[in-house]
Image (tube, rainbow, N blue to C red; front, side, top):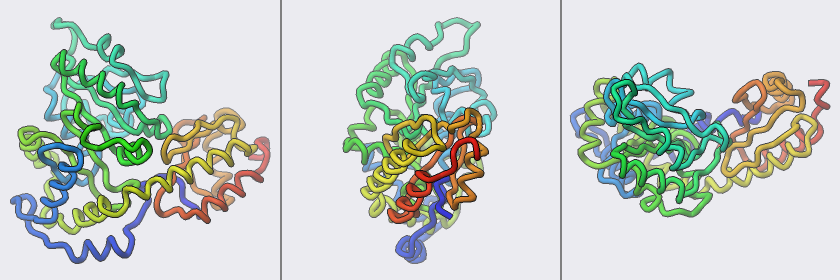
Length: 344
């Protein structure tokens, strides 16, 4: 099977496993794991932030950031497509007691500084207190869409002027940086906090790093403990993250090229009536028969291609380091000769 379901399905390479087995470890809850500390420092330095905190998942880093930045009754401004809203189990409400204002329904999950300005509530006891703006780059449900650096900076300026905090869900931020060539530290400057995922395109088995200033990370470490995210000899996992940062970033360009090839094949396939052209490693298409996303996924499985749905009318392919160029060639050939839509 050729597995395009997600870039989370990747497995550690032999070299990554060797780095994990050779890691020097200690008790990280006591602040004594040298490999965890090295990963946190390396990630923070790359993005120009003061400190980092290693956590088991991107959901945890996002939820910790929201908890630190907000108080119960506050409001989080984010995209209607945002992972923090759609795929984190209602954590904004459950973990932080905050409500949500949704934007970005008309631009693949992206929104403007003007939209943020208009969404900020007045200082009125009838309204929740607008406290945090969160963006996701790239936008998963937007087909790996990239935010413009100028738009992100403009939103950051609104946050600064209006006293709001600003968080980046960077689950696939390295895909964005490789695609644009932006300097990570310059790109990250407007954000008060950043979640950087290691277990997607970078190929680590576990983990994300939360970045910010020292005071923010100090509070985040307390919240991580409350959330049950403190790990002991976590250096074995952190070593995979260090290996990923050192070896697996530049190669993301291969995944982007593979996604472009798949999009081209889908554009000529009887299975698709519309293809959203990929900017990074995610390809979305609408099945030839409206609403038949699940049936299309089932049919592709019979051909040896695994993928998934984002909605009944949207199918997703994600490229990653465990899909070879030869496998992409094979998938493209199968897509071009797939059955007409009426036979799906």
